[in-house]
Length: 264
Image: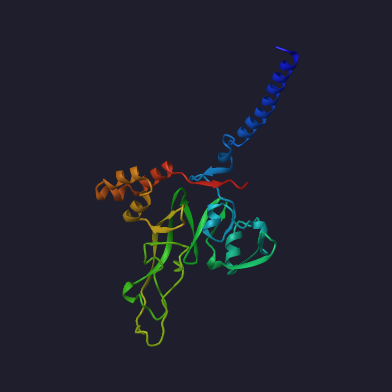
């Protein structure tokens, strides 16, 4: 082979090498770095600590992104142990949004808040600690209910939990009274309303934010997302279903974890 022929072959090899190397590097650069997603997200467990602040809605809860204390306009000392209690007693909350614009919101319109990493959800104008968090959360609320015989009251009283399954994003607000008396509507203005306070247990579907009463029917509905676990629970005798509701919610959370942004 002539010297000229050898030179051509060497040039071709060098050209192929110079083309192949950038392509290989570029391909590897598209692959996700191992553990990258896990580093920015953390599993929601009973030990999880939410960022302290005011949560205007459930979307802020899901993203662990409240209005922090530093953006709240108040004369209360940020280090006061009763900071949130005093802040909420004012009836309105003033804060700076992400654009630095002053905003205000009525206290009754917020979802809740987090203090020392613990979530408190608003129900009937009071805030209740969420004692168990996960894909399905559990909490207890002290609520006021009314005798259904006087449901159509001229004073607008209504049991906000009359429906056992509702969404906080629906037009109907579960935390407000919806029946009002209008002249000629057929309501009896002299009926007496029988109210009572009672403790009720509730569940939160952390995927949707929907709140349901803690009972067998709603437990089955929430477990339905896990076919295997649902079938196992469904086959139990009624008595066992009632006894093991919370056990199966724990199982569901372990098998179907929910991940939140760390937001350090």
